[in-house]
Image 1 (spheres, rainbow, N blue to C red):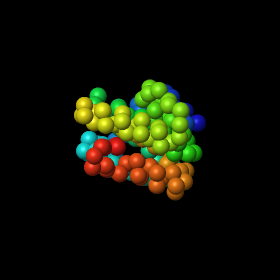
Image 2 (tube, rainbow, N blue to C red):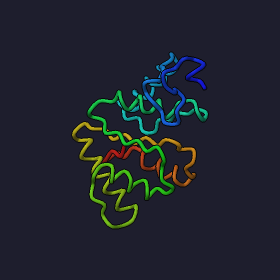
Image 3 (tube, rainbow, N blue to C red):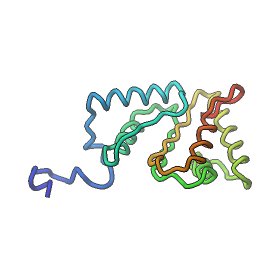
Image 4 (tube, rainbow, N blue to C red):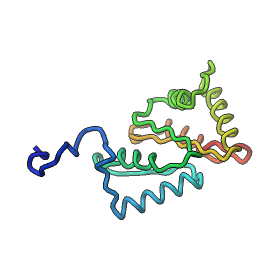
Length: 155
């Protein structure tokens, strides 16, 4: 319908985001600069809010295309329901062996990885799309994970 009326050669409103249709407005540029600053300066939590259908996922994909090689980004577009499952997803994405145990042992494993990468000036970026679906308990565990540790950095 849109293709015919506007003489589009393809559907710009497909369900899956497509970066070739991404339009960066002046406000988008400001938000992008804030996000890049938060990431490059390791500010911990950075939040991107927007109504459903406003292009947050496409914006995230554009952001990921801009990041330098020293930033290891793990985008999670459908976050797991538990914090332990999130740790498992992160460890799998990092191609680390999954040690048997609970979330405490997985957390320790992730912290060791982060400590080593931090010493090499590398940054791990975890992007949780659809985070509004996470429980308060999950978000609190995530907040604690992102809290700066004076001895060892976490994120």
